[in-house]
Length: 579
Image 1 (tube, rainbow, N blue to C red):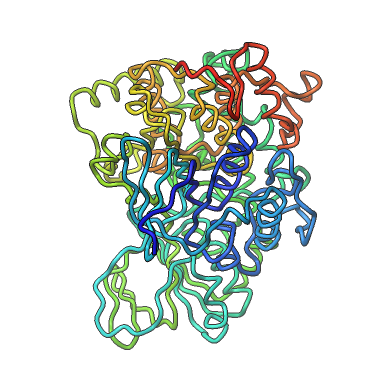
Image 2: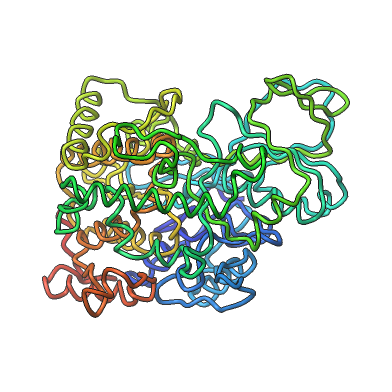
């Protein structure tokens, strides 16, 4: 066995982000010796064959969940246009085949460590030779490492699995009668629906002191308009106070005037009212326990106390009832919701809760979310690349945090006094990367050898992934400039301050941009010199959904701009690498 293999570029991850990053790099430089590594058994990342199951749907409609230049087939789509997991898996697999990526992909290859060397990177592969490469695209994303809490356990013998393993345990789940689901994330709603639809008894545990249950939107607004289509409009994005959208007439009216802010509040109260009515939280004690929190407003003094804008804050995240008849199945099903912590697992297969409730169960499914899998990098390297798991408590960091908060308060008055969620302070920052992609410290040193796509939470994953891939590859090849390290650090601090104020608990933990994906895409597009407004007229620009196909030809558009400026010649030719 050779001690090492050599490649020009290694992409870690064969999901939405890894595949488009690889395809984009090869579009720029077709002769690159590039390989994709993934620890799964099939291509697809979270949508791999082993992780999907019946009744698992994406939270986005058909026509919105695809790359701009590669349409998805319309197979087994729900009546509200939501897409089943199998269709998404087939799409990603076909994309890999059609773009020559499947032959470059090595599955069941687990990267255990990534070390920086003078001329590139060394990757340690579990049970296989090391791989050395010049450039590394670390595309494992924000949902690659299951978060599995630990509780005291003695004599408990029933299976305990993470939601990511449901697809591999379907036959076992069919043979049980009583299941316990832990957590309030979107995966818990999908799992509970699957179990109730199969006639199982379900205990659903959501801890009392956490961020609470997911905020759930109906598939259609007013029973007419597709919810995700509305979310994909610029009009919707204008009502979200966003640090990436602080110019223009709509910003000045909706965020900088009292009348505009009043309109914004009315809009979000009505959206919340529609979501509450669809869910039917008042129908039962069980349903009431799924009402999202917080119930307060901060200092939105004009808001009505009986109808808080929970959908606006998305404190525990935002989801859509993408599975058919979720709430109908929930209200009719044999399910008990518990708002309590798990104290311990006992003999006779009993879960004991913090309020003394004892729950017998045949199976426990942990819908406790994911963590970015950055432990591949040593703590020293994470510190160097600004991706440390430790919270920077230096005076410099404190000064940047204060500056970021000041900027957000000045530009977005609605976020000056967000509700208190009574959550413990975070142990790390939501983001440490400029544009959520690169290390400011490394870039300032001229190191363009790595970027990290996928570390941002957005419903519109494929389109965001496509823009991140183009921005990241252009950065790697020296085709775009970046500002000074100080300016990049201020951008990161301002994003973090906004994220924590805008999305509360989710914004404290993640780079979260659920209502703001268009603003994020616009930011990357401006960096790349790509046109942001892509509709035919002002009315369509505001009210017509933005779809991936609106951005068809991104790479050619970018290259044409680069060639006009005399900056780009690739594959053996020169290019401007000034940063």
